[in-house]
Length: 95
Image (cartoon, rainbow, N blue to C red):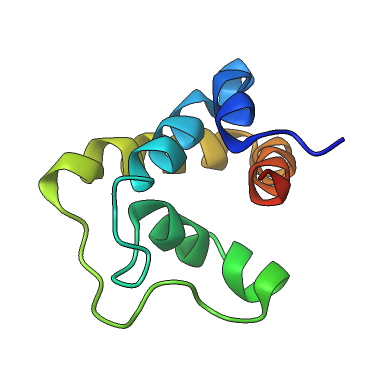
């Protein structure tokens, strides 16, 4: 059974809470303009490796409200990249 996106967010393991926060924050952005979560996926190489492309348009800039969530997500990923990638896969597969 495929989980709902917000259920995956709410059930994030403690080592992926900031990644979940960033994904949730990004739901407030216009996907055609890019999102902080997509920028995160591009930066860690997830987009190129799993989606064969980058997600955000060239020139996407993080706004001040998303910088803290973005850096927190990077810190989590840097400590447990394989575990975080498994969680990102779960987020990506959610409805």
